[in-house]
Each structure stands twice: as C-alpha cells, then as structure tokens.
Length: 90
Image (cartoon, rainbow, N blue to C red):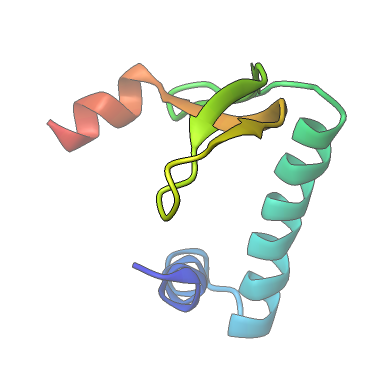
C-alpha cells in the first residue's frame, strides 16, 4: 500500500472525500514529523510508538576504495509496534 492507496482507504472507511482524506493523512504525517523533530515521542495506544534514536558517530569504510571514513552522529526515527498491531498481524 502506498500513500495514495492509504488516502483512498481512509476516504472509503470514513466517508470523507478524497481531498479531505488527503488533508487528514498529510496532517497526521506532519504532526508526527514535527513532534519527532522536537525530540518528543508519539504514542498511539494499541498501534505503536514513534520515537527518535540517537546514533553515535562511527568509522566506516568507503565501499569503492576501502578507505576509512567518519560517519557523523545523527538522529533516526524509530517505530515500535504496539500489542494491538502485533495481534492484528499475527
């Protein structure tokens, strides 16, 4: 399922028009992104938790030349599925 499929499914299940469903889906994505960029956690009970994981700087190798290179520290988005989602999948 891609983003357009998700918008269509939301429109169908909620009775909204596709443009209203697109606005709702975009709003959810924007809200989650803003919260994560502020360092907050987004907890959706029964679905899962979005959080930010901090990765330390490390040394890697350039695959072409084999030379060592420094990989900068970064923040990575992380998702942990909740019990309701796990039960729905299994």
